[in-house]
Length: 334
Image (cartoon, rainbow, N blue to C red):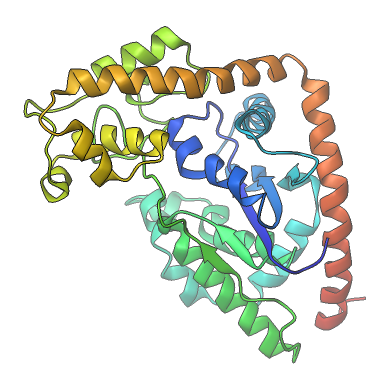
């Protein structure tokens, strides 16, 4: 692999991947691997910033791997591995901890969101994980990072750390300054029960999300029960923006049909939501059920999944060690 046009992205192994993960990330990962060298990582070290049951974590790593492959990622073309299996991530993270500044981390809004009101009880790992994220990216000298808009601040931090490292050690342009790759049309998929909340595995009601392993009848039932309002589908996008649940269902429909919201509104304006829900259910069953079937099939063959991770680790480790040798020398480590 060369350093030219390399994309890196990671997904936490929280288990039970859902429609938001697919439309918001995995679908774009698949298209990206046709354009540049891609490294896709199951970031298990990030996952343990909050306590994980060990057996559940192991299972979730394999399930996330299965979700990658079932969604269309090619493990022969892209490097797919779990983060903890390449020790260079942790080593570089420590070096970058010593480059990054406390003030930079204090500005990270996601720590404030995740730690909540009682920051004193949050783990140190949760506080410094943006430095580990920078290490994930810079270890492979990635030039691009496919992320959602909510992660842009972390890429900016990675750029600041890379620039400071280059300047501190007089290593001009050693680390490239990674560019956030935010698709022009990226779907922010919201809860089916509350259009103001992101679709999430952590939400108590299973009716809030479409899981990638859901059966056809479950998908149909969840869309049927999805929250809407009493008005018909509007013709105007400005009006739609004031109706979060309607916007969410039409966004999902738009993404599955590869049509703009405006084009969808032209087709659907004036119709009631039962019409949209029927069409949406059919499309989701057609798209999601084959993915879910493949995930379940692969989960029955853990040896196959572990072999994918092993081969990915070997490929990633070659590149990581090559860069780490240079980094150790630059820093003055023997």
